[in-house]
Amino acid sequence: MKNGKLTVAIVGMGFGSCFLPIYLKHPDVEHVIMVDTNPDQLKALADMYLLDESYYTTDFEAVLQNPDVDAVHLVIPPALHAPMSVQVLNAGKHCACTIPMGMSMKELEDVIKARKASGKHYMFMETSVYTREYLYVKELYESGAMGKLQYMRCAHYQDMEGWPSYWDGFPPLAHPTHAIGPCFALAGQRPVSVFGRGSGKVRPELEKQYGCPFAFESALVALEDGETTVEMERFLYHVARGYSECFNIYGENKSFEWDQLNGDKHVMFSRDLVWENENRGGKIDEEYVQVPDYAHLLPDVIGRFTYEVAYDEVNPHLSFKQGGGHGGSHPHLVHEFVTSILEDRTPFPSDIDAAYWTGVGLLAHESAMEGGTVKSLPKYEEL
Image: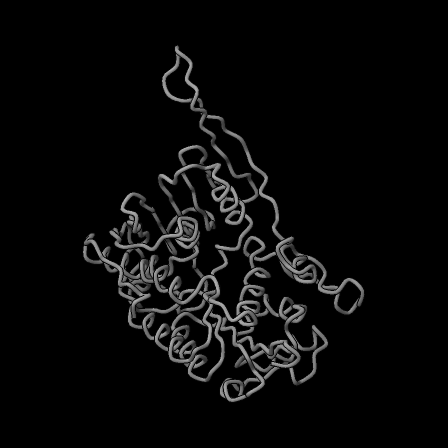
């Protein structure tokens, strides 16, 4: 750390490039190092942002051994998430990692143990708990306006045809956190058990890699209060449905439902507890809601990236558009990671959150493969 500011390495400059402008502009970041196996991609990004050779390298091991590097943000293929997170933590660096946390229940435990042994912080970079929609519903729920949470439903619909081959036949609920994260975060509870079912079928060549025959997987999750249930579902292939990372929250007084079509508006239902003699049931009001932005929670220099804007409005060479990804969540994620390190506090989501959110999906898939057995979650905080 130099002058109270961090040096951060971003590993994986495909999707990782979306976070580069935010780190470069963050007031508490001194220096950023891009890491990738593709030197041409690194050089292209450096030229784009007018950065010299100190800003990029293909040598991941050198980054881990560099005492000036405080933190590493991993944006890499799923099979590498847990092993490289452990490497980063064992090297004495703070670690942020994209989703999922790992590919097996053992890998989740490995990351938690490495974090504890290192004394460093691990942040799970789940976009869905920093979107405008989540922050809006969280604000509404915490105000008391929604009343008691009665039920939650979540989904991640995405056709993965044509994506890199490591996604071929990926078990749908082994990658659950875009869907389930907001529900667990809103409830402030851990899952205790899950029941999963598979439906439909993928073509044989997709089934080979991971042994999953299902086009669709769904699950019911019990939370620790013993009263609240979350329904989650996911597909990756062979389903005619547009992309959506969505949640529906049903409260006693108000309920929020995600839009059906991208670009449409979300819907709020409000329940009037005053009955009229001639009617049965309470009065339900329905309205479209315009979800606000939450850039005001961030420093101005990075808050602007909740929407797509010019990277630098003054320098014509840097006037290209950046930002706005995943519901405006990216600058919130970067700011939480950076400030949690400087304030020496547990980030949100933490490794424990990540293990529950990822683990519930892994067990849901396992349950589906067994025809629908009930699976209990480990107590990750006790490891």
